Length: 432
Image (cartoon, rainbow, N blue to C red):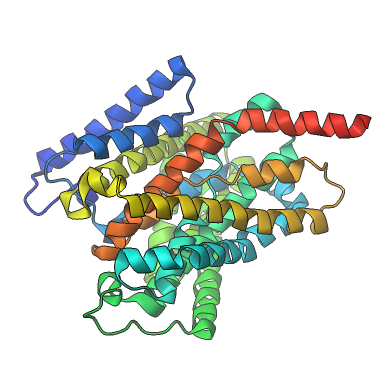
């Protein structure tokens, strides 16, 4: 993260101070939410908005797109996979896979179709890969903001696994597609959507599908091999600190290794984390080691999520992106509103048919909860920060931020009321 925040003339001291300041702000915001009972991620995204609006970003700080994904994605995915129970996941594997693979593609297409005129106007031109990219960045869901509500509301374990499992796998799908779209049709994104640049190459659908299958398959293979290798090592250790260090090397090492061999680092990390979370903790770790490992990765997840929301505020406060004016631009606001509505519609088009057809015996209210729990969060922010500098990043960054803001404020804050309403409707229907 230190390299990612450094500018060409920043000193190491400035970089360290900036990183520490971000973590400190995160802790202050987290402590404050305990008093006002506002969802933590909502408070963070509002804090990021304040940083953007009032221009409080550290002087000279910027984000290098070539390292941001490598720094932030492995811990987010590893922590999620570590807590995913394969026994529960097997019971909902079909709806999870349908929502995570075809569902991501369908949602991306719906967003692309709805947003095309707005993107074309905002960029002075648009290509298929460009508008699909916006949909792909916002297609993955982030359940972190609703899991605490689920726990408080006593949501059944199977329903929680459905929401968590879908998020875990659609993260991998979205990031793999994100890489394919950039490689297949965009090149230099900023140049591809300006009038004075040569037209961007057309997206070869067959080649894109082949590329996705290739990177996903290779990533899965590498993740399984590194996960099994780490399991072999862990079974021969009895040191909770060393075993936790092995998990750190596994998370980032698996990602880097898969990317070096042109596979999906994201899918590789997911596979490795599932192996360690379901077999490593049970077969090779003592109770003390499990507690240490879980506490460590929960803390890392907290820091990474926090810093991501604050970094997007720093990025938006950059004058090169238009500063706070860009957030309040009418066209940006209209695009964000349209995209948010398209995401809700696209998710409904995925969730309701899947649940009704695949799991007709589930309680009727479950499909409404699954639909409403499709929040957007840190992964979308990480991907938009991973775009090359240029007009596309300048336009997409505030749009994605505003969509995530709307998702967290409108959906996360009202999730408890939504669950109560669904339960009340079920009781009413049962008595009629």
